[in-house]
Image 1 (spheres, rainbow, N blue to C red):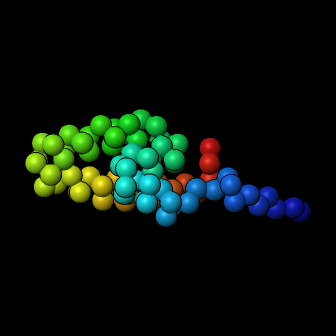
Image 2: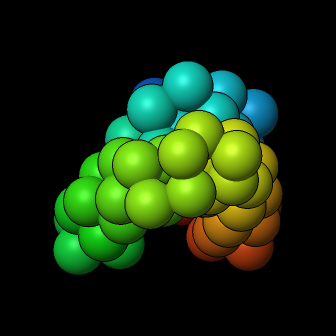
Length: 79
């Protein structure tokens, strides 16, 4: 009986997804294949930065990084 072992390029890297979304919120979600979620973060984060005068924009960066990491960890293989 043979076992199918996924190639590394077919696996998502949770750390990379988190770092991408930390620096540019939404890019980690796009890396994970969740295009609409990525676009959401790309739109909402600048709005929060501007709407709060820069006080809470960093919160979007952290939440976006966490959600990208969590999704990549729960779904390690590309679709």
